[in-house]
Structure formats: C-alpha cells, structure tokens
Image 1 (cartoon, rainbow, N blue to C red):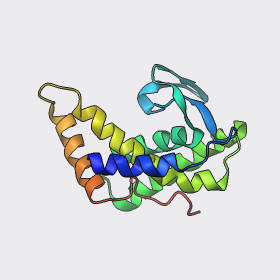
Image 2 (cartoon, rainbow, N blue to C red):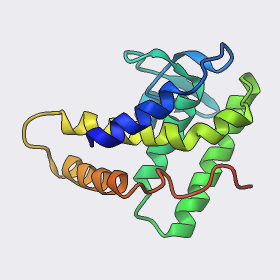
Image 3 (tube, rainbow, N blue to C red):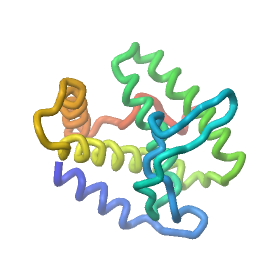
Image 4 (tube, rainbow, N blue to C red):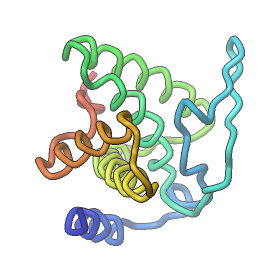
Length: 157
C-alpha cells in the first residue's frame, strides 16, 4: 500500500492551495459524525480537523456511504450515490462555491480517503473482528486494482 499512498501524495502535493479552496476542514464527515433531526444536520467530532482542500470533506462525505453500499445491485448503488451526491452538493453550494476544477479532483481525494481508511483500519492492532477484516480485504483489492473509489461518475448528470 505504500506505493499507492506515495502516488496519491505526489498528486496532492502538485495541487494549488488557493484561499478559496484550501483551509480548515472537518476531515472526517461521515454518517457517524452527523446528527440529523428532521431538516437539521449537526456535525460532530472535530478531533481530526486539519488544513486541507475543502473538496476533501466533500469526497469523504460521499465516499463512505457509497463504499458501504458497494455490494448492492449496481444500478441501485449508482442511483443511491447520485441521489446522495446531488442532495449533499445542493446543501454545500448554498453556503460555498464549488469550482469545476475541484470537482474534477474528487476522485483523487476519494482515493486518498480510501487508502487512509485502509491504513487506519490496518493500524488498529490486535486481531480485527470480521467487519474490519472484510473492509481491509475489500479496500486492499480495490486500491491495488486501481478501481474507482465509488460506483458512479460525479460529473455525469
């Protein structure tokens, strides 16, 4: 996994860091860190906040639910991903501008998150339970095969 981590790091180091696209982010916006009450969303757990590209938070937010749905029927997985993405971006763009250049970088940010997810799970120590073992096996296979991080194209209508 080290080579894949190095490669994604090289791509990220080459990206610009403009003030409107790089700054303080949550760095872990997945379903376990959201409280939803009707139309209200509260984000929790800011312990891994960092300075990074704003698009990484978008990539993380769409990667995790899409990854969890990966065993479903492909059309249903794509439909779920598209629905989730459309709603998430609609909310995001009410408050922030999403430049097309950064939208094009989302697959790289998702790959970064996928590799980091693998590294985090692998580093838990001890004998992992079955869910972790399955995640590690699936993540390793997907990363080494250079499969897309999610099962749909974010840029397609």
